[in-house]
Amino acid sequence: GIQVEQSPPDLILQEGANSTLRCNFSDSVNNLQWFHQNPWGQLINLFYIPSGTKQNGRLSATTVATERYSLLYISSSQTTDSGVYFCAVGNSGYALNFGKGTSLLVTP
Amino acid sequence: NAGVTQTPKFRVLKTGQSMTLLCAQDMNHEYMYWYRQDPGMGLRLIHYSVGEGTTAKGEVPDGYNVSRLKKQNFLLGLESAAPSQTSVYFCASSLGHNTEAFFGQGTRLTVV
Image 1 (cartoon, rainbow over the protein chains, first blue to last red):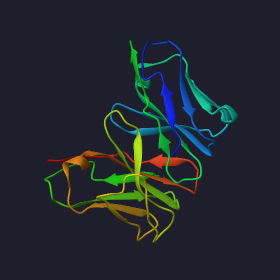
Image 2 (image 1 turned 120 degrees about the vertical axis):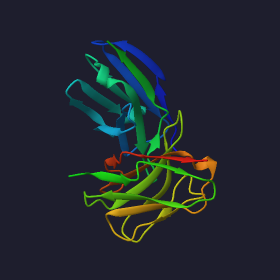
Image 3 (image 1 turned 90 degrees about the vertical axis):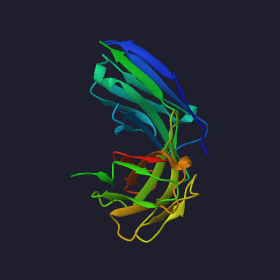
Image 4 (image 1 turned 180 degrees about the vertical axis):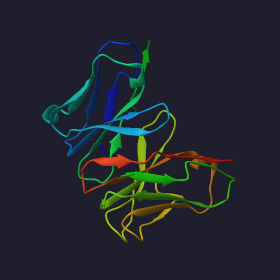
């Protein structure tokens, strides 16, 4: 299956700071999603972005499919942004292949 | 619009017991999936279905069975639970292949 690598593995920010999370993948993809797993374990859909750029409030994402990476930007971080951010990709198979995630802690 | 709903949210089983996890979606999605998540890991696909009456094996199918008798429901069964099946189980659905997937809230299963 497709290999998905996320960086950094862990990140600690002060409230108000900005951050960039990266997702590298090993093959061409037809599906790429970013999720936020909150401290209660729920997986929240952030972006469906197999290519291009999208923005939703303080979050934005860019996928450069030809270079096999995607970036998630978080601006003006808040404590509620804490949790684990997962990148997941798919191509010809049926599974979403997940990275191991970036664990984010935003401190007051 | 509830999205994807999983039942139960928590369960403790003894080794050798059986149980069924229920997933229901109200988005009229064709595709449904069962994943498991283990500590420090992303999610891995157990089984999936591309339509009512169909099922197929994913990456880690051993020890699990599934059924999709109705389009809106996808059941995951454990016939003889083992401690290695202690995990958090997520159900997901999508409209079609490589379309956006939506996940349920998860079921935390402990096998002792």
